[in-house]
Length: 177
Image (tube, rainbow, N blue to C red):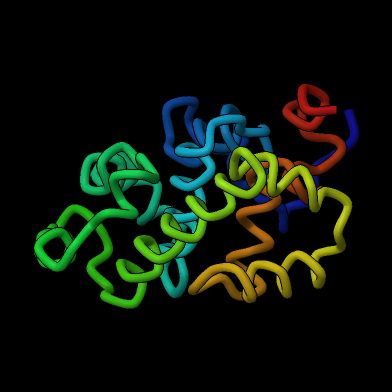
């Protein structure tokens, strides 16, 4: 088998123990298409919260995020009020950044609008499949909050909308293609 370059996430993750958070994420989630809108929203929330932090931090807090953000139920998060924001700001199990919290609520509300127009968040994403990364970034910046180039790119790679999540020599690449 051809070597996987050392500067790739695949190389790093495959060096970890089978139960390591990076290995589990790499082998079972990263680049795998999601079909459920709440799961897609959850991934977007995690990617937004990763900004300025390590992905290890986010993976280690993932279950806390799921709990704190009501299982990433879009309809619930979209209805969050000031009391919910205060609760989240005091939850040591998640990233307590007001801009990121506000973005999650705003983005849930925007996704609800997309669901009304396209039937689902996934349908909206599918409608734009084939866009280049710069086109996706422009669309996300116009549609959502806290979605710059890196966040948008990682969200789209991690959910299978952009290529590059796995090196062609990675065993997971073969599962996805």
